[in-house]
Length: 120
Image 1 (tube, rainbow, N blue to C red):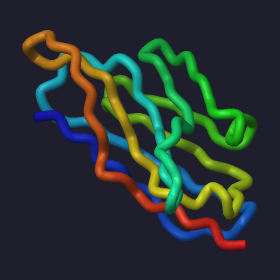
Image 2 (cartoon, helix red, strand yellow):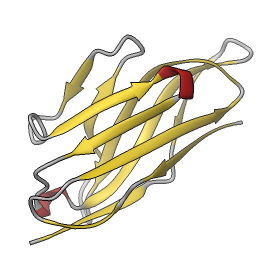
Image 3 (spheres, helix red, strand yellow):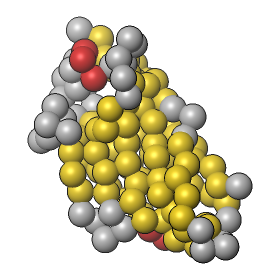
């Protein structure tokens, strides 16, 4: 079994910053892409941004210039640095990873989510 464990969520005032972390553990051969999604109350889950194993990134238009994704392949960990936070960034943030397991099967896994609340 492979698990993703997120951390770093919390309450912050508008204009503030938070850094989320997501660590993968288990029977992993390698991790391909890692991504952050978010789901606000009453809304569908949406992609925030993603990063390939080689470090290429893409972001939702709503977070470009404010959020930065990075990863540490040696630690199987992905980060989301969130700056200039807005109340509309309030959501549960989920980590997602596409990985190759020890049997060389490609799989996807989700984290349990971490709540980010931005007060105005």
